[in-house]
Amino acid sequence: MMLHVPGVLTPSQVAEIREALDAADWNDGRETVGAQGAQVKRNRQLPEAGPLTQRFGAVILKALEAHPLFVSAALPLRYVPPLFNRYEGGEQYGLHVDGAVRGVPGTSLRLRTDLSCTLFLADPDDYDGGELEVMDTYGAHEVKLPAGDLILYPSSSLHRVQPVTRGARVCSFFWLQSLVRDDAKRSMLFELDQAIQRLRERESEKGGDSAEVLMLTGHYHNLLRMWSEV
Image (tube, rainbow, N blue to C red; front, side, top):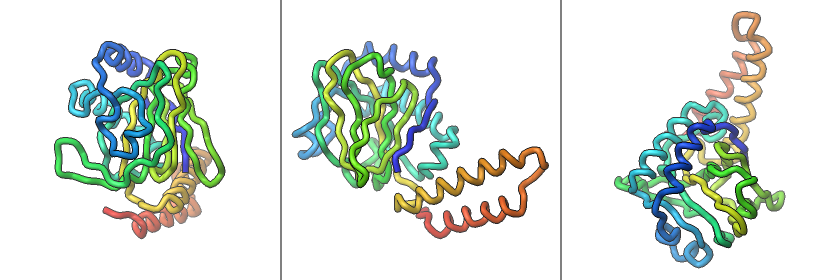
């Protein structure tokens, strides 16, 4: 499942982050990938352990944990902390698949990458090219979102970033391990949860959940209990 998650960061948060990132020193992005990725990756990244990465990564994770749509879709268990990249002057990232297991910098923790996240920090009009292209069974999907919005997609997807021919594409990117490993099961839970929320909104004036909403809520939690890995 691919999902556009709007409004993860506010315009003021985006402006603060961009002001700091535009003045930062960037490293070669190939420093953080394996042999396969290094062959096709041409961009720059902030140092993984750098103060800006740590500071703004924490801001992003806090915002995500408070975003109901993101939590409903991702069911996050643990994260690889957000990183930051920049593309300009023809830089790109060719077709690749993200590694299945990643370590959390500074710890001995390793996690399975179920979902990949790209949080856009530049508006589409600020640069040409730079579309995130994700391949699935329905074909190729190009993504270029407003600053502050995030795209969530399975880490098993073949994907790439198209060359940036004008301006700068600035993003945060990271991975997470979900409570539910299977993408199809996670998608079913998301759709069920969204249906329950819409029913609750319609019934909000009645002063409590109907018997039908309670039944559906019970099914949601029982399925999550059955499928989750904690």
